[in-house]
Length: 139
Image 1 (cartoon, rainbow, N blue to C red):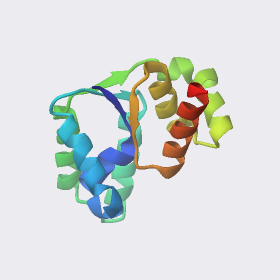
Image 2 (cartoon, rainbow, N blue to C red; image 1 turned 135 degrees about the vertical axis):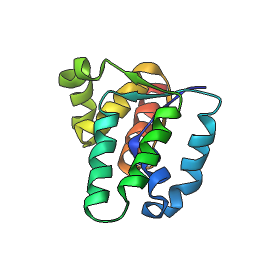
Image 3 (spheres, rainbow, N blue to C red; image 1 turned 60 degrees about the vertical axis):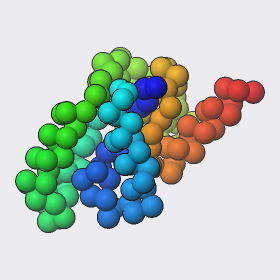
């Protein structure tokens, strides 16, 4: 079964020590990608690049580490949803407001809502918003 992959999960593949409690979850997502597809909003690559660049600037990872990470992402079965920009000023802004999320995080939530896919995230606020959305939908 496909799922929406949040950057918070993928970045643990690069820097596991950034979220030791999430390592097992991130590894399960990585393993799942051998048999299924992840979907990401179109901002995923830019968001990942931003964090990777910051990690390099701080000396936490090397350029070689970053290249291995980006090569890994490139080998995975990850599809980019092209509707992110189209939905940005309404369908993404609304959950950002409602759940007090960044527009970036709300893009993942909106994608999961729109596609009906599970959201794989290690971001506590985003997970809480996804749970609230599911609860509201089921009532």
